[in-house]
Length: 192
Image 1 (cartoon, helix red, strand yellow):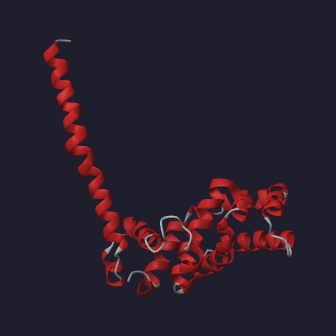
Image 2 (image 1 turned 180 degrees about the vertical axis):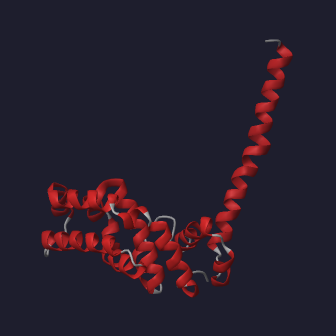
């Protein structure tokens, strides 16, 4: 390669890094900023492909960056918002590490409202699995939910089986459809 070719390649790479990449990320930041200011009247205008993400970004914008106020803020929102958020974070946590991990982490505070959310969305099989897992958790902790006690929850085989059932459940495979319908049916609660 000649020095001119190398120089032109260097200039091209620099141009991409300085001009194109920042504008790409800027658009994403603008979308996030736009959705953090979501209005209820905008729900009907959003296509299904972005609706779930828009509502997620709107809800996550309500929480401080450290997550220290997550539980009280989400629980103070109208039920449809609490249900949506709970279903979202609990499902993510179960897919990430199973029911055991979900109960060990702070996501456990959303397990009951996630169960109610699945029911409210019509995802009855997911609701029943969640209900069984919640009963096992409640029986396990009784009056002691200390970190040391919670760590032992990983050894409960029934929770492993329920994790497999949950991740393979048809309701979960079609969860986005349930969520989109739920948001549209309850659009007055989503957005400021």
